[in-house]
Amino acid sequence: MTTFVDRVELHVAAGNGGHGCASVHREKFKPLGGPDGGNGGRGGDVILTVDQSVTTLLDYHHSPHRKATNGKPGEGGNRSGKDGADLVLPVPDGTVVLDRAGNVLADLVGHGTSYVAAQGGRGGLGNAALASARRKAPGFALLGEPGDVGDIVLELKTVADVALVGYPSAGKSSLISVLSAAKPKIADYPFTTLVPNLGVVTAGSTVYTVADVPGLIPGASQGRGLGLEFLRHVERCSVLVHVLDTATLESDRDPVSDLDVIEEELRQYGGLGNRPRIVVLNKIDVPDGKDLAEMVRPDLESRGYRVFEVSAVAHIGLKELSYALAELVAGARAARPKEEATRIVIRPKAVDDAGFTVTREEDGLYRVRGEKPERWVHQTDFNNDEAVGYLADRLSRLGVEEELMKAGARSGDGVAIGPEDNAVVFDWEPSVMAGAEMLGRRGEDHRFEAPRPAAQRRRDREAERDEAQQEFDGFEPF
Ligand SMILES: Nc1nc2c(ncn2[C@@H]2O[C@H](COP(=O)(O)OP(=O)(O)OP(=O)(O)O)[C@@H](O)[C@H]2O)c(=O)[nH]1
Ligand SMILES: [Mg+2]
Image (tube, rainbow, N blue to C red; front, side):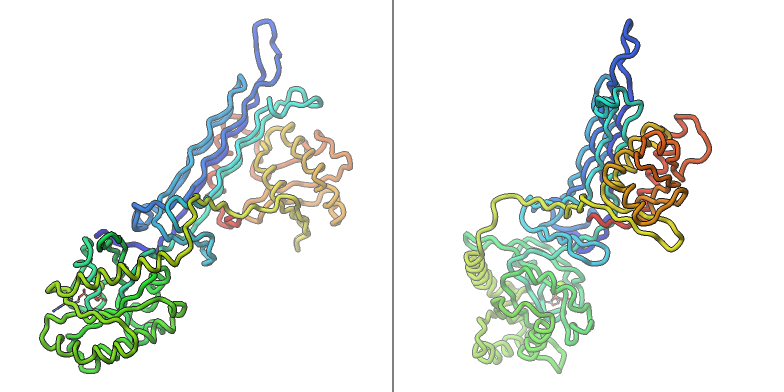
């Protein structure tokens, strides 16, 4: 069986939107036709989708950086840029998506269930789309927006029907290896299994999955041994099997007290009380083991457990056990509400794009935060006065100018739009009319100082955008 990786950190980057194009239609005897610059394409999303043929997160462990394709820029002749392709990442059933702080973003259960982990940037509008009665031939276009970038954590909570729990070396992996086609590592030292193994069992007409869990020892809930962390794989199982060792040579152990210890650890972990449990007495091929099994059996049965005497090595009692498990699994499945037939697509919570805030910071800088103003700033080519004027128009229509005035901003004060690590800073001049040209000339991007040729400017801008994205780790929209 392949290595089982059950927790990975993944760096995802959606595609950037393509830039809009500023172009003017040209014909032989019509030197100045209308604007015909097309829109940029949308950047691709990064989407996680449950694929039942995937069983581990191993792929992501090996290559944890994933990026969707950028949208293509628009072109003259009203040609729109192509959208970037979504990047679909297959994940195992039962993958939990978390942010780095440990908050659960999505719990992906059921084939086809999807989660948009990073949303692609919108393409910029071309100058054809920006034309209006008032602005007949815009000499600018909007830039594509950067796609979401950030880190997520994927954690696998195995979705198995049956979980095997027990002391190290009780024979849990051995049992999986003889009940199913899985070939986990088996050895006579404790903690051979470091991550759960999964096997598929067929008994009659029932097919079910069995997972073993790394061995538990007294005090596991306090972090002894491998701890209880792996019990999260048990949470989704409908049946628990206690695998008890009848042939251990440790003098202070016997099947009944082993069971008590494991039950106590399960109780400490919590939430598993209602799972049906059965008991497997393993290693009865060993003569002393068989004797011990017979001795403790009545005691276990009087506690209400169904008891199976088996030998994983000598293949004794396996058929009975697999059919009994099939019956319990079928019962649990029948009791479960019908699974939704429709695929679920979970999108990150929509950011509230209605408003914005203006705050005055200690150094006297006014900071504007809000989905729209921040988006608009990203769309603006600050080397183009007309584009900056268009931004000023939009900001004033949203009421940003007014709020700044109310907050006490005066001519010449610094105004930053965006978060600390990714803001555009202006010297602000209040203008009730917010005339496009007026603010346009004042609009300055701190990132661009010396005049550079257009091609150089474009290259720099792109490099800076990539850099800014790599550095951007606030990652809040997720
Ligand atoms: N005689 C005998 N030995 C067995 C039987 N089942 C397992 N063993 C042996 O017990 C040892 C431990 O078996 P594993 O299957 O690795 O035990 P485990 O419960 O998975 O142990 P951990 O992964 O360490 O928690 C190995 O040496 C096996 O060969 C059995 O039915 N009879
Ligand atoms: Mg094992």
